[in-house]
Image 1 (spheres, rainbow, N blue to C red):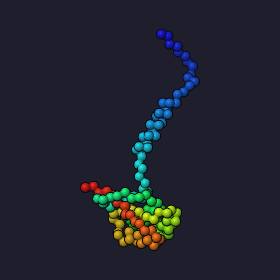
Image 2: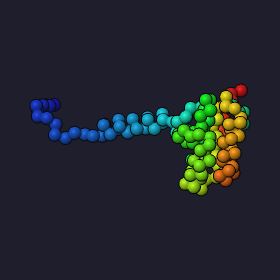
Image 3: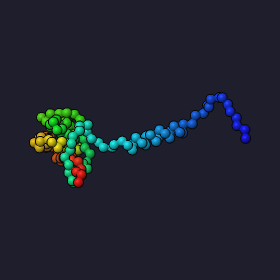
Image 4: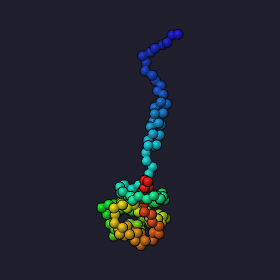
Length: 134
């Protein structure tokens, strides 16, 4: 059997191996990424044994351990909260609010958030919790 060799460059490049590698990388990053929708504000949520998944909504109020109130990712004052919630309620047809309060927050601040929501006509409230380990 006689093989021929040449010093000419290969004029045809096969993209199939490169395509396979890129496809595997895309699958890897999709599988390892987190699909959890959370606001950018970090809080330590209180624990609950009967933790249930809350329905996704755009109206999320977060209260940090320092007592700072956020609507979504935007910092606000408790006095301006009613106006921000009115704007969010007018943008969508959702009538529920998720309250993400740090477990060290005083209960009266949570009550003020609920009062502000009730004043703009929001009827459903969910206080988000974490699943408690037994």
